[in-house]
Length: 83
Image 1 (cartoon, rainbow, N blue to C red):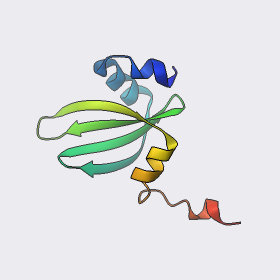
Image 2 (spheres, one colour; image 1 turned 120 degrees about the vertical axis):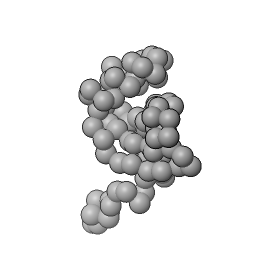
Image 3 (cartoon, rainbow, N blue to C red; image 1 turned 30 degrees about the horizontal axis):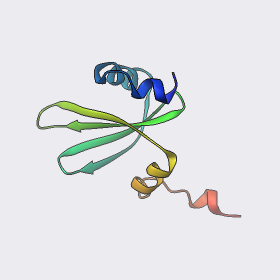
Image 4 (cartoon, rainbow, N blue to C red; image 1 turned 180 degrees about the vertical axis):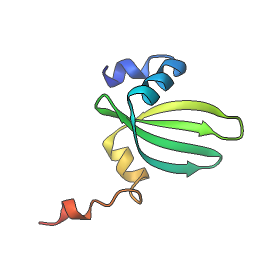
């Protein structure tokens, strides 16, 4: 499955695909959301979960640039930058 196709399917189907085929790679908090970053099918998706309601609000696709900006504290890429 390609990212544009994934983007256009219903939330319930996205949720199934992320949990069945995705690999969790990072977590962050924003307001009352627990946000988990997954990789699947060659792209990245964030699952926005509200623990109080036990509900997934949305699943968003992210670019590599967005991931680096939001998760820079989660990933240590210093070894990749050494020459």
